[in-house]
Amino acid sequence: MKRFCWLMGVLVLISVGVVVLWKGQVNAGSVNRVCALWVPRFDYASPEDIRRIVANANEAGFSDIFFQVRGNGSVYFKSSIEPWAFELSGDNVNMLGVDPGWDPLQTAIDAAAGSGLRVHAYINVLPGWKGLQDPPSGAGQLWTEHPEWFMVDSLGCRMMPTSGWYAFMNPVMPEVREHLCALVKELCQYDVAGVHLDYIRYPHDYHLVAAQRYPNASKEDLMRHSEFSYDNYSLTEMAVLYGDDITGAEIAAYRCGAVTRTVAQIAETMNRSGANPLCLSASVMGSPDEGLHYAYQDSGLWVRDGLVDWAVQMNYATLSFEKNLKAMRRNTGRAGFRRSVVVGIYGKNEADLLLSQIQSVQDSDARGLAFFSYSLLFNKSHQPTQKGRILLPAIRSFLDAD
Image: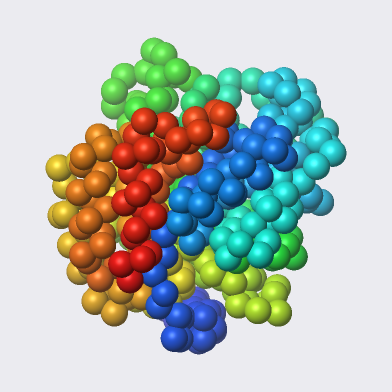
């Protein structure tokens, strides 16, 4: 037992050390301020949409866009691994895997060429399917092709998607991590500036929506349906690592390790896949302490050890914004905060509050600012919204004040 744990520790340290050395090369001398915009997959439906989005982002003064190309086990780029998203061909799930005849990611890259705007391929990492209707069999979707890859709750049930929430894949399983790394390798063949990871955590908040799948369950059982790591693979591995009497702290460490190992393997894949180093960024919870203790997302470690280039803090709070900012600085360290923390703000908040938050980020030592999301600045006709007209001058001046 002790020998096994020692060997596992050595292997993890070696793999993390390789990534840290590479990340050090990426970050060396690279401290230009960032002003990024999230562009979710729901914000475009045609090549013209994408061209207008890129033009608006560039004119608004953004330096980077996180352009979403994976949602729930289907993709918005040419892949031999996962099927085309059905949304590109209509609203019928039976269109899953149908080639739309155009490539959204390549369209975004082409539209941004020569502008200086950097395009990052943005993916939902662990979500595997969403909705009450199963995908058609034979389409290559993971929910039907690899049901064993999904998380299992403490009642022994595979995590079920709801109409508005995803079923998550299990990062503990080597096959899941290998699959994700293969997707990232495909993305690195495009002329992207980097890869942006979202939903790289455990779904601690599933209990808020689980009643749709378990309408007669008690509150206690809904919480148990939101407790994961009870698949056979995890239980067997934890028994080997910790013995029969597993503590809550050991389970938490095991989950954190699985998420961090996924980030490290993706970083190593990116290192091996491109001629030039690419930026690895990750959306992380606004409170790093809550992210660690509830979602098993150790964003402070990722920054301190150089596993990510940018930790994009989803600091969407109203009352605790400054508190979260200070906690992130404490968790990442002063140098890490300045080098790697990009503070995300939430466009649904009131405009006056957002202006104040932009100024707070401006005054901080953070690497930069990110705005969620495009549709809160521009409408479906790609004209500035009322809130956009208020915020865009402040966003445009953010980089100028560097």
